[in-house]
Each structure stands twice: as C-alpha cells, then as structure tokens.
Length: 222
Length: 222
DNA sequence: ACCTGAACACCGTTCAAGT
DNA sequence: ACCTGAACACCGTTCAAGT
Image: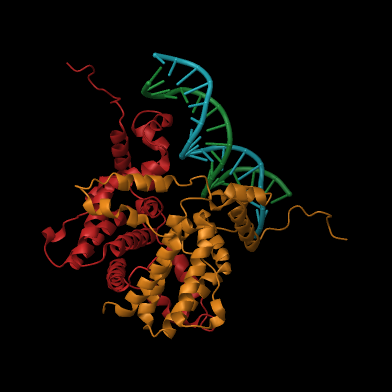
C-alpha cells in the first residue's frame, strides 16, 4: 500500500541529518564525523547536507547538543544538599564527554546548541541559587564550571578512542623527566604529583575548589 | 669561496623546521600550519618532515613550546605581593595565547613541549610556595590555572584570526534568546549576564577565584 | 644511511546544471 | 524551488625507490 516497498531514501530533514550524525559519532567516534561520510550514510552526496547545516562546526554543535540529553539533571531525585547534587550533575556532564573524548575537544571550542544545553545551564543556575549565590556571580561560575569540566574531559580524553593511546602521556612524562633538579627544582620534585591522581579525584577537587572560591569571590564592581 | 653563492636549500634540522613552523603560524595563523605548507616553505616535500617530527600533533606541541618564550615570567621585576605577580604571569600566558587563538585551541588538547613550558610551571609553583601553599596542592592548582587560562583563551579566540568572526557568538545569543521565560526562567533572566563582561575581567575573576578556592580546599587524602 | 617523489586515502565547500 | 554531480582546492602519512 505504501508507495515503495523499501524506500531507500527517506526524505531528509535537519533532525534526521543530526540524528544520523549522532549515530555516526556513537559508532565510529567524532573524528569520523565528516560531511562526506555522513552523506554516505544518508545515501546522498555531501553537497546535499548544506541544505540542512551551515558547515561542519554547526553540525558538531548540533551533535553535541544531542548527546547532552544523556546528562542526568536530577540525580538522587532532587534530594540531598544542593552542592552534592550540583557535583553530581557536573559529574554526569563530564562522564558523557569522557565517553566521547573527540566530542569533548569539539565542546571546548564550539558551544553546544539545543534545548539540552539550556536545561543544563538552567539546572546549574537553580542549584547555585539554592546555595544562596548572587545571580550575576552564578552566571560566571556556571561558565567556569562547564569550562573546567569540558577542558578537563578533553585533555584526559586525548588517550583512547582513536589509536592515539598514551602518546601524549609519554611525551609529558618525558618533558617532566627532562627537568633538571638544578634548573627546575620544583618541577623535578613535584613531577609525579603534577600528573598524579585519578581524573575523577582531580575533577572532584576542581569542582570543590570552584564552589569554595565562588562563594568567597565577589564579581568586580564595574 | 663558499660552495654556492645562494644556498637555496640550507640543511634541515629539527630546530630549523620548528622555527619555520613558528614563523608560518605567526604569518598566517595556526590553521595554516600543515605539513604540506611547511614543506613548501622549506623547499622540500612533505615526506621529508617526518625525519624531524613524528606527526602533526608533535609539530604543534613544539611550535606551542616556542611561543611560550614570549611569556613574561618576572613581571614587575619580582617585586610586589606573590599573588599579584602570579596574576601577571598567568595574564601574560593568556595574552600570548589570545594573540594566536588557533594555537590556544591546540594547547587545550596538546600539552606544549620544551623548556619554556617547564619554566612557566616552575615559576607558578615557586609563587604558590611563596604564598604558603602545600606542594601537592600547588601541583594540582597549577594544572587548573593553566587549564582555565588555556580553555578560556581558546573559547574567546573562536572569533577573529580566520574569517569565523562572530558566528559562534551569534549562535550563542540565538540559543540564549530561545530560552523561554517559562521553561528556562533563570537562563532567560540571566541571558545577558552569562555572556557579559570583557574577557579580561572574566579571566581575572577566574584566577582570583582559583586562588581563593585553592587556599581553602585541601586535596583529598589518599 | 639518508632523503623524497609519487601515490593512497582522504577532506570541506561551491556552483552550474539538472529535475 | 529544491537538490546534487562534479569539480576545486586542499589534507596527513607511507613507502618504494633513488642518491
């Protein structure tokens, strides 16, 4: 009864393009999200995609926005102290980015678009308000929280996903090892401490510090 | 007397390759730093570069390391309170990255290599020690300071340099504008505040906050 | 031993031409 | 009006072959 038995080319829509792009990232990693490969998945030519997205950057932002749907905005069902809930929301955000390191790298430069990003910001603002933080300061602090979470995920995500494994880690270790005790005594002494700790512990400490500092640091007047 | 009048192909060395790469970035921006374009400048084929650098990532890290020479590690000639000097060093670092936004984006993912990076870390560690911060905490705080400075420069550097001007800004404004007062009341109310402030003010507040928080947030035991 | 020409396997984006 | 084939102008990296 349908017009075709196997409609091999369902009509393209922006939503469909973005959804397929997200699937591509899920299957093969963000490094493989290219216009040409996406077009291939959609059984068309790359030129056709430009009807739905402006360029690659906009496409990446849209996919990023899609992935943010997985962030848990109501951990522990809204119970518990506000700061603990905030830590969990931020933790959920970084967990999502950590699963897709190449996307985290995109997120550092390109802000995600779409309703999920808005909902995340809204949730963080509400939690800070609950903690009694003045609005203008909360705005900047949310920015800083997301900046740190994103950059941290991007940095630690350099290993894995693609074949780049621990190359960057080895380089850093070599750089630190090159620190002579006479020229750079503190780096030499702290070499291990600089890279020590599980990423999760480090990130939790970062957030603790941001909250503690945020509570005590008013915005400059004018 | 020399073997040739105009030795059009001086022998390649790693140092020479990196120096030419740095010049290329200075002249045309980091986006134009490609193996092929660099090879062209050196009057050779791209394959030859692989004798001196492992891959593009390593080349970028080396150039980044070179640029760090411009960071002022002894502002105000070592006078004044430690925290004010630290703020200036971090400010000098971000100023360098802000001049080359595409490099800042590289720095988020790839840690710079070379002696200048080591000297920067050493200086920051020394300043924090002067401020009485325990060593292990100082190590993590330096990491966080550089993370924030780098990511912040990378983010604000999305405009300019290449033709990408305010496209990202416009997108963000559109996203914030889409926040309905009923669904996302806080985002709607704070829309302006979220993006307000000169990057420099914002960054200074970030550093203030990091120092304040760092002083009061011990590392987790274990 | 050291270097590299040429090839392989890709890219993003545009635009004239088709339906 | 909507869509796209084909072209333009690029990429990183490898490796067989040359000196």
